[in-house]
View 1 (cartoon, one colour):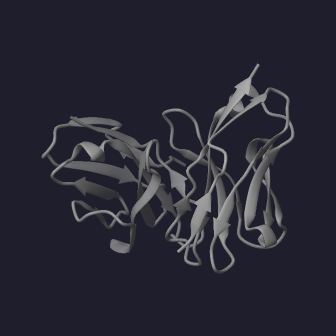
View 2 (view 1 turned 60 degrees about the horizontal axis):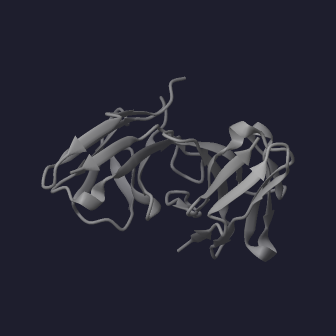
Length: 113
Length: 113
């Protein structure tokens, strides 16, 4: 069974631009969560989607948004990029999103110049 | 809201030595506890998890962890460390619905030959 895939793996943007990251969960998994990982703040929860609905959201500004499609694939969008948005963005999928194991993708490394 | 602390930022052990990584959590109910490992440039891989039952749980790669409710701890152990265990280790706690994972700041493990 294929694992969680994330595209692109690396991305360089400039301040003020917007970016869209993509995540394809493991087949059959309906829950997708997004995390931001930085050296200073560690791993922080962004949001979780289940059956195309956002079920839970972390403490991030509205510039961070996401969506999930009917095939469970998810996208995350960051508008008006700031230097502080440079991070590794990790996507994780699980069967139900309940107290279940999350399987992580390799991440997208975003650099904002 | 739940929280996780990992008191040790960086630990260095010799190959073949035993290892214990500390994790303390704060959560009002029975927590769902996880240990993940992250190698450089990689996503997170689940080592083991605790939901209920036996408080000593076995994981992959020879790791085990013990849940101690009285101490609010979930420490990770390995009797004999291998050079390939050098990585960053994250303890995480999920709530009753498992939708909101909170990760600790991580402990970086270095292994001396």
